[in-house]
Length: 103
Image 1 (spheres, one colour):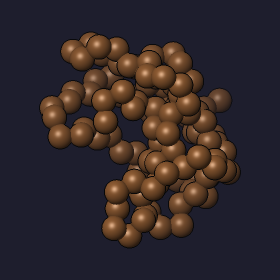
Image 2: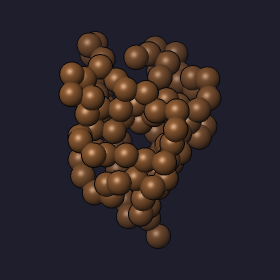
Image 3: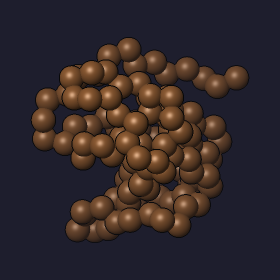
């Protein structure tokens, strides 16, 4: 999934957002949906760090990759839950992960 940083995946049955260009990801039960990023990739070249800023407030999510707004959704049906960090079949490293309440 290189060059797709900024996609939002909705995991679980009944999870929805107010966005109409959603696509179904590969899941036999159709319980995983992908909201594609808005812009061309803003990822750094392989081997360089990327920064993500993800803001969740009430039922809205804004996702920035290296300072570029890549995705924004509203009317999320779930406002609590897990945060998933994933790799698509190759090694990945995470650093400096912070969770802070919005003011």
